[in-house]
Amino acid sequence: MRDKRKVRKAVFPVAGLGTRFLPATKAVPKEMLTVVDKPVIQYVVDEALEAGIEHLIFVTGRSKAVIEDYFDIQVELEQTLRDRNKQAELTLLDTILPTAGTTSFTRQQSPLGLGHAVWCARELVGDEPFAVLLPDMIMKGEKGCLKGMVELYAQSGGNVIAVEECAPDQAHKYGIVGVGDRIGDGFRITKMVEKPAKGTAPSNFFINGRYILQPEIFPILATQERGAGNEIQLTDGMLKLSEWQQFAAYHFRGTTYDCGAKDGFILANVAFALEREDIRALVEAPLKDLVGGL
Ligand code: UTP
Image (cartoon, rainbow, N blue to C red):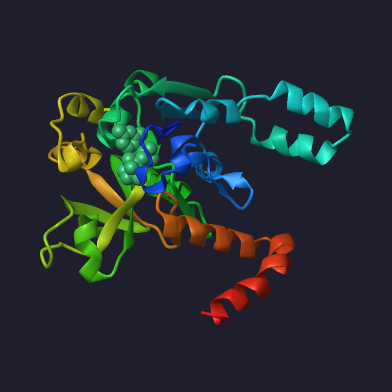
């Protein structure tokens, strides 16, 4: 069936300005800020690879060239490591290097919004379903969020959006979905509302930054008017597509760290540091002292 074709490609929109992380983002893309010892984007790429994604498409902008360099060989560094017989470091660099020909980069010349960034990937995606992963959201769960979505998609076909629950009084801050019949680890979506007025949200399930979309979204995004924040919004495009295509929600049960925000970024660092035995031994007691001293 056309709407159940394998999801082979993933789009990472990395062209935003990252104003919440100024002044750091004046020179360093927020996706390259490190959580423990890996850039945020590496966690998100790993999630995509775990889900069986074969081709990574980055929509970049000005001053994001360092992301492209990160996914390439660094000849001088590697030669120096070889000269110094640093085998463990060489192996580490090798494991994160994508296979040649499986990454593509395109530019969004002006940051006109997430919907516009996704549209910029249309030629590279072509006529097939694809995933979108917001590259500043790190999802921590037993199973990768996109992997769970791909499993649901095998049942539901169509479009799949990952959702999580928020406190009902916080629903006005998010894109919220209406809950229909159960399917797999999720449910059919009955409606989508971007930032509903207080007390009007159809549920407390919010869209958390992972999508599987059919290519029919592209012509919609091509003519999409600017919406909230004067940006071309992906949610507005999905709303139109949902008039004739099915949308299902995958209920992600884990923790999401919004690393584009300072609190999420700091918490991600603490959570991933505590999970690493070598680092936990170093930071656990001082962290307890810090918190206990508050
Ligand atoms: P955000 O609104 O979270 O990112 O967009 P931002 O605009 O970079 O951050 P702030 O609010 O100024 O701090 C969600 C995702 O969409 C991408 C961003 O890079 C981010 O990963 N995006 C957003 C684009 O690629 N292009 C855009 O025009 C807007």
